[in-house]
Length: 162
Image (cartoon, rainbow, N blue to C red; front, top):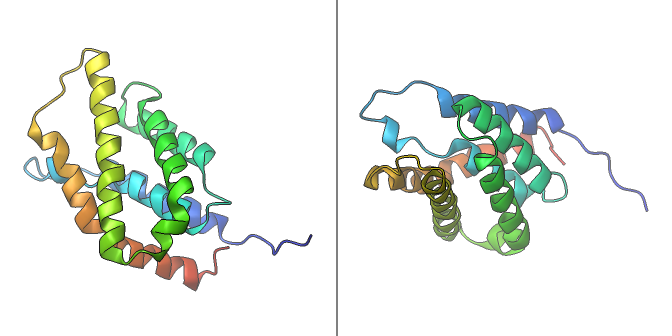
């Protein structure tokens, strides 16, 4: 069985690098609680678009990089991103055919699950679980999904990432 050659691994890595950078770029104090979950969104997109290339292993690895960048508990983002990748991989055939507004609702559920897991881990380790502002990234991520999806899809098509 002949498979077509895989192309665009550098583009996938570059989008994850950009998402990781956007995660740690300084924002004004009033805007910090609204920071979208950039890396989770990029992970969901690539798991949806190329499920045979981006999966739980990539999610776990990117999660470990996120843990290092945020100087948090090692493995908390890795666990959450691995779960996000798994769920997206299980649902990618459905998610692909949804219009963008329905995809955004699915993103709401996935990012909320990510936030619940982060909150649970913080609570288990005795850290301050914060206030209602912990949920603002869910809202900003859902609002950001349609333009981010269109940009990533444009990159994938332009560079013929397969």
